[in-house]
Image 1 (spheres, protein in one colour):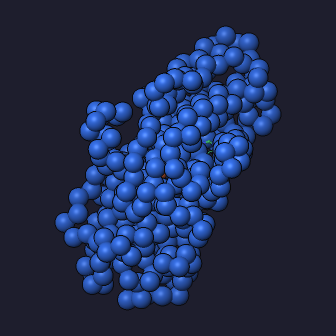
Image 2 (tube, protein in one colour; image 1 turned 90 degrees about the vertical axis):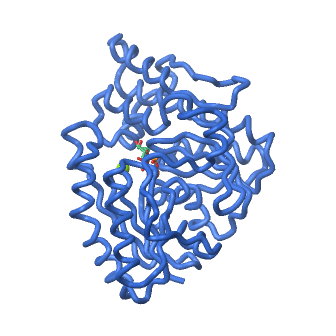
Image 3 (cartoon, protein in one colour; image 1 turned 180 degrees about the vertical axis):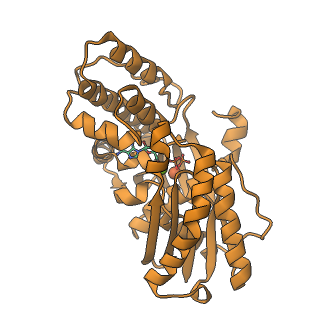
Length: 340
Ligand code: ATP
Ligand code: MG
Ligand code: FE
């Protein structure tokens, strides 16, 4: 089984071909960093227009890389949300048009499901259920992944996402865009104990995350003029790691899981990976993290989620909607109210 995957929900345009037995036959990706850098963040309108220009050539390049034609593909998987709606529409409509033209089934993939199942593309031995820390630009959640389409949300952020905190900190410190890798690099040259920063909700009886107070503390540290940017970056990264570890540890005692797993853009961070690996070892649990390129946005994870859904018989109609918001666990979302 060969699946074509398309991704365009934020600022990476990507197309990939992945088989049901985990062969990545093609992997094409075009980042838009240069387009957004002058603005210090992703501009939705520019992102959507850039996807229009970049996506179809990347599909052609992916087919050429794998040496196949559309006729050889079994299904077309496209991100249908959540994300910047203009970009989502570009990828989903492209997927629909290709599905219609080639007479292939369409699979409308939740971008978060792409992140959530990506560790199973990387590791053939990873079985359900697993405890997943999903840390990305727009999300910070702990999920019990019980199967394809079966996600139980145990915790979420009450304000900012972890990646968002990295991006805002980078901006405050003038480290540039995109923020996560810039903060990680600066942190290498700094002292994680130099700046006293809060650990919001650590030790709390509530399961959730919070990062907004940390961002305000970074702003105050910067404005105090007492600290080098590298020391603030290192101390910030350590504070995020401490929050992630405390909240994840809280769940490890409470759930039955085969492994501790991390996914999403922030999972590319080496300090985050190392701390989680230590936590898993503490609990005698297996630790799984996808390779860094599979943590940040890409189309291989969308093709893989498509392969998992296709195997489960989950295909969509050509009328599938594009969704700006699309929770993985709608029950948790309803119970707690929007955003939490
Ligand atoms: P979502 O997946 O929630 O819709 P997104 O697709 O924009 O959001 P991803 O591409 O999964 O997010 O991840 C991007 C985020 O990951 C950004 O906030 C970025 O700063 C962060 N990030 C990337 N690399 C690193 C790193 N090395 N250290 C910390 N954060 C990182
Ligand atoms: Mg990006
Ligand atoms: Fe993402």
